[in-house]
Length: 294
Image (cartoon, rainbow, N blue to C red; front, side, top):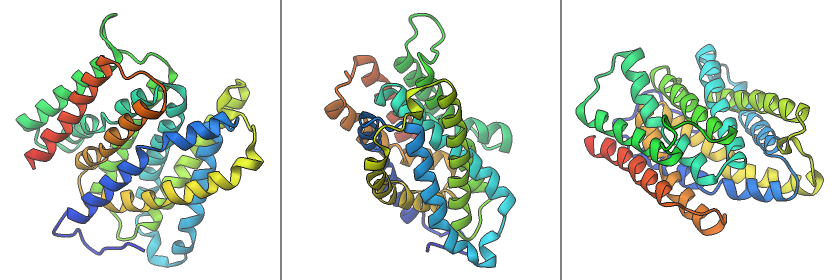
């Protein structure tokens, strides 16, 4: 299990871990759409993934020191888990490329939160990065009818998920714990609770998100993919989020933008428009400026 008593002198390993997890999450939409084609709603998949992550962290919580900072970790986990649940659902409610790009405005929200709540310095390069991020938002959502607003529930949930993720990673960096098991458990518990709420709402409204479909046949595959593409990245990203600042976490996770947009353009059958291409360029450029600044 990954543990550290102090922040490492080098950010290299945490940065690599985050970038690799982003690449894995870039193809996260593929199994979600496969399960959806078998009639299994996305809310069920999110619920099962988070339940597995909670169980994976339980053995490490038997040690007393694993409960350090439990109240802070509970809040962080609720924010991060809710963010990922909303993002998971958004991937099946809107175009994959839209969901990914709207989520990855996280460096903008992290920078704004750091400035207003923690009085962090706002440099010229960060102002430029935020301007590019908002320009990307405008390009993706369109400005034909005035202020760029989400086109549908999926767009709105993706945008909200990025804000929750930024808040959670900001708190994780400034209120770290030496052990990663409690952050993972809290993340998964927050995701489980938010997924259960989404599932209950979807079931009440008879939405496809709550459909059971061929659950019995798909369950082994859901569990297997959860062990590959969900549980390990949770440990790695939450370990890294306590060692590098939240804006950088959001930027390094932009490997998901690269892998997600490429895979969606090639495999989803959804058209990759010029506006989405421009939006991608703006949002990725915002991340590159932040990296070069450092």
